[in-house]
Image 1 (tube, chains in turn orange, purple):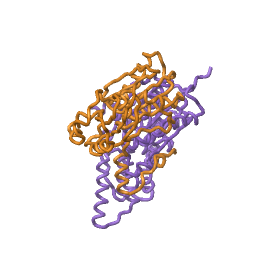
Image 2 (cartoon, each protein chain N blue to C red):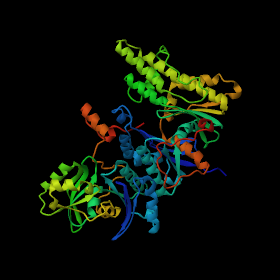
Image 3 (cartoon, each protein chain N blue to C red):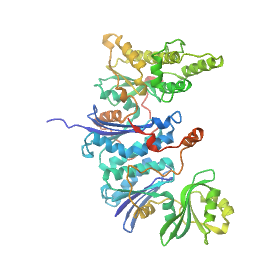
Length: 241
Length: 348
């Protein structure tokens, strides 16, 4: 099965073709200019492998968390490919993909969400198989470390992600410096890992796929707090006229 | 031999409407789907960009299929894929741009990026044939411009607002009157029930350029209401609406008629969301009717349902670009502050 994978969730743009055990991956630090660079990079990857989009069996994409605008570029692209070509579409957690690039162990996978907040999840990887221990969410650093402590892990925890360097001392203070290590990784999301995780995931309806932002917009939160009204579902607010 | 029909599938997502359409030969709407988010943004009193972007991605694949199905066509019959790439909200624009580029890659059908303002003006092409040179008054929540077109693809701004757009002023004074966003339609209705008793200023009306300013009018309006509040005087909301609208319509029509006299276009077009305003439509029709026969342009008022944002107008504009061979490539990006070029007289 040929899987084309995309991540535009962070500054790092990555696309990959997974075909059996072979992975062809292309990466670019394009500083969130994904809209300009994504399609040319996919075309380059396909050309080098003598393929067209029609040869792809399954499209996989980082479905969140991540930069809201970034996620939408990759997801819109993957949704349209799958919808038009009538192929499988699979969404993979950005944090699972990040964790999957790390060696076996218990892994805290995180993206910086500013002001000592993270988008984070905790995973266990055994013999290359990934299991989720703490669900992906938006956590303050104190909450995240408490959740890790509650797991009562016998071994050191591996941290991977974009803001580990920035928060290293704080994590050491909260968790104890002997209790964690930084992953030997470039801390980036790699599309090849998305492709690996997408192999055994169930395909979803392209019309239904939306980013997993893990946070409501500030406008909605303010409105909810002010009016006390329920958030409602998306279909309450968009209507064809 | 009959000429082959050209079909364009168009996307529009620059603000709070997600829209797709199939347009035949730049003139005929074979399908038009508009998913509006107004109900969502009414919670906040105006469009919240992040919320808008979130809604766009929910419906994009669904409404693409619907546009093809309603036109009773398939990708095989589509000659070009068009998309608004600016101006607008960047996150919102990016949904349409990403979708159109992905569709172009998946099908091999060429891509055409379209300026949103060019699209609004070309809503007229779906109503009637435009003869060139043409002149347009483009009025919406984001723009107030007089645009000169020497042919279907060359557009030049000859007049622009120096501050607020006319539609923006409607929404702002609407808020003072307790009218929910978007306020234009209600203010227009109220204006018809009242009289111009407040005589608000007509900014820049006698200046010899074609520029506009609406922030002074907005301030005068708000001050009048606040002053009345302070002295516990109740003002007639219909007269307030009528007085506000009279000022807007006076300035817009005065400058437009002067531009028509100078540039002598064969066609005059009213475009943009405020083109749905009956006060403005009626006044312009009346003033143009009074012009001498040798300079009286044909006037095209777009259908009311095509005044707001929609993909049909983008498909119409894209057809002209298609004919001129103006295609975009795979690195097309959203440009939130895209501007039509200014005429040389504007640059001095």
